[in-house]
Length: 381
Image (cartoon, rainbow, N blue to C red):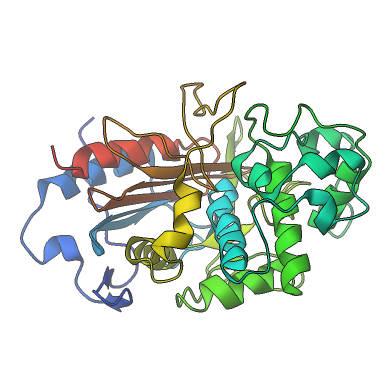
């Protein structure tokens, strides 16, 4: 498909990552050294997926700490037509799990938590089967906890003030009334949003801070991720917010929240290209979490039963909040996120120094596919 229109760099001026890990605004990195055909190829792909004045996406490519592609297409919300830019905040959905895992790693580093701590040590009123579930099981999706969405009342409806939403405390309560796990902890792998909600609760209990405050104090503030937050309705406000949308027969419909949109540990973080570039740089340099502390998070889980799988069912590997299976022979850390009205993906290729972030506020957008297409364009051949 031939595309004639050209996408502008997101924001009034693209933000380029400098060696210290901070964002300095100026001319886009890919324009400072002459034309780059890779930029044109990725721009064409993005433009082909998003028409003007419809919900869209933002895409970032960083190479060894330097932003080489930084573009947005479409609008953050249909009511105002506000264009998507570098500061537009999208709900990350399950890409949030990396932050939850990082919070646990920080508490382990502090000596306040251990990976082998048992669920009943942390929540004594949890059912007896929690005695066999460790923090490590929760991080690696080997806990056997059922998905809380399967335990919720299926007829939950919105009230006059908005959606009736389950909280992290509500999830924990549902699990406490569940008589048995789906399988013996550590026996097999099964992706578990419940496990990461519980991890958020553990972070809050051990730190003495609400989970959203712990993330702010220990991760977002130190990295100067000034606009990133774990969203709690009525308690904090998302600046430059993108609202989720779904395509229907009658056109676009805002589908921004659901009964499960208020949980935090499994998918409640909002962030932008600008801030996620800082997160990526911290991971690259080990400036927030030292390499020795990060090492357990990057060890693929080993189980005898069912193994980790990608969304399409292909074999995968999983650590703490990151998929770890290689792609085309290259080592990588990656995750995808899907929730009502949003699709997100991050692909990190540490040895090649390439990171791709794709954030979208529409449910029909394949963020993971675009991220891999960008990897194909930018990874050295």
